[in-house]
Image (tube, rainbow, N blue to C red; front, side):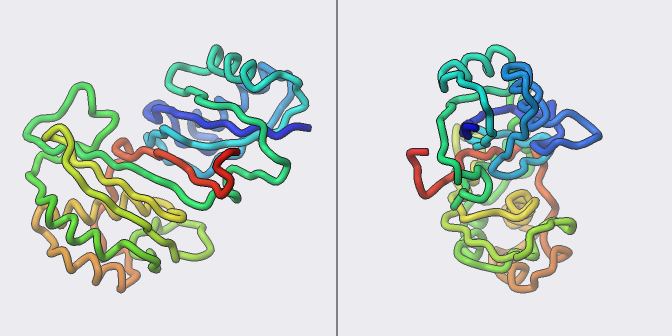
Length: 250
């Protein structure tokens, strides 16, 4: 039995997230069905983590086990010939027996995109959160500084988050304007709680609107109370950019 690592990109608009579930089609389900068509064997594809409905990925990582003797390139070609156009396998690599796409991960990078102008976009609506109010990016940067480091992020986790510990470390949180109309927030950390990035973005947008002062973010963080934070940002602005492993050659 071999273990293969996949690096994937997908547009999550049409899917109910990564995880197989009864109420809609998921990325995991489509991948498993496609691999079964190729190998004639059922398999379970394990991802580095769940992405929610409508969330995208440029560098999701997954693994599965197979008895197939197909080469990495043959798998790559076969998968991309059968998968829908909004799911693409970028890379297939043989992985050591102890590799686990989820448990072996040591960090992740996410990008959140906001369209910040007076009118929406016919092209970017599925890849950004449209906020028509002028946002103060400098104030958002000032607020974001309170979030960098190792903290208890209970105030920014979903109520049904199943993580054993709310403690995570944000290594960097960069906020910049791109192409004039877009505000891009880039998060890098050792792990993220359910809705954590989207809840942080929702609070930072409140700062950008002037509804919160930057120091309020520190107070919310220290309170560990989700009710004191801002709203959850919309899913379509979020993209999983990269997953990090200690052995990057895998």
